[in-house]
Length: 400
Image (tube, rainbow, N blue to C red):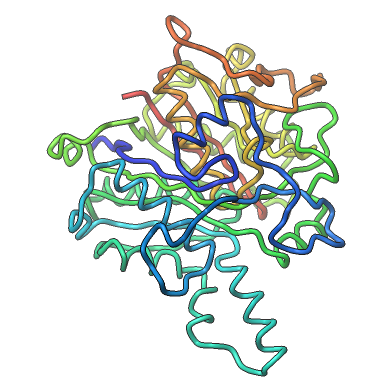
């Protein structure tokens, strides 16, 4: 089977407007969660979130209108393509898989306000709030003529996008694909998530005994996924091998994970099987780790079931207390963090971890990044994602 590799990475998120800044702040234990300034937070469960700050759309040389979430997606794709050394015209025939939870929520809300005020909505504005707008816009700007799909599988979407790109490459649909996720903060989405009570009223504390919810944010993460043959032919950098992946759903409940984490256990097992990799080879897990009471317990139970007696020795970290929960962007940002961890033998910390939960008892890399160079260096890692509706995805990554 054709080997699949990662040759480029790009991001826009609350921790930074590019991958180097994101990684530097992540490893330093910083958080991008702060009071939200872009919208009125009155009545929301928490007035804080992961807002992208300092982003300049004019930097990308486009004077046309474009929804903010689509701007994030294009900017991340622009960085990833440049990182992969793919110049003008090099993406003819390349595939594109984007994912989103809420699409152009900001444009949708503006359109509603405009309709209420004037009784009409500009057709161009309508186009911008469709879920596929970011993919359409990016494909046109980058002249990508290959297969193109937008998926929405709740907060597992970023991982799903990476996996679908992997399948396309294995099947010969294309030799290069861009994959990732994007979302923007909107009042409508935050109001709904507040009603569901998934948002912490104070702080995101993954795996901590006092965890009481997550905190949402915005941004985009994008990877260039490529066949090894194509990468070698181009002399492209290879950051990691995408060994395999899997997707499933719990078929259990809209928001609550199934008992014992059976769905997550199954998706990790399937991903390892797809990667032809033993659980004994896993050296690090970047967890979904939302900071909600039941998700963190279910994910811990699933990891223990998959890794068995080794579970307590394998480091597990969640970056959501640092990045916020960036919805469809989360799986892609976490895959980028996992790849950087494998490349630099440095594990990102789980910040805000103060009180161990006896039921969760794994090594969560608390609060301080960990050097794992030398004999402890992980060679294979899992990146887990889950979402409302019981959606799960797992991506298996290996050091090059």
